[in-house]
Length: 80
Image 1 (spheres, rainbow, N blue to C red):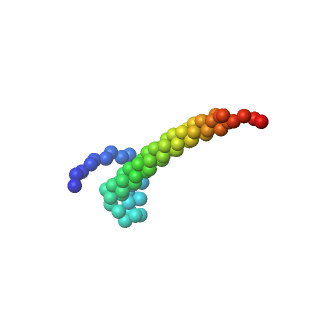
Image 2 (cartoon, rainbow, N blue to C red):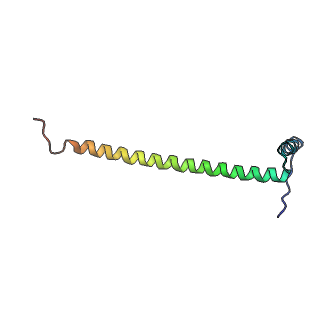
Image 3 (cartoon, rainbow, N blue to C red):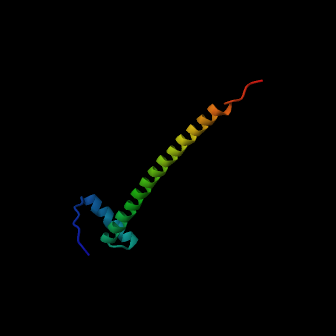
């Protein structure tokens, strides 16, 4: 396993120490889990943005289909 050195101010160090102790984890394990959780959060945010963009594209295509249909709905028909 590789080592990473992290500089932390006193407040952050105390927070990490207290949280790790309350969870019965080492500070290293707490930080590893935290980074993994943040990575998952970022991936979910990216997926949400991709879904949002795809949804927008589908709505725009559906709108165009509806407009095309409305234009053709009366095509060739006369009001008698």
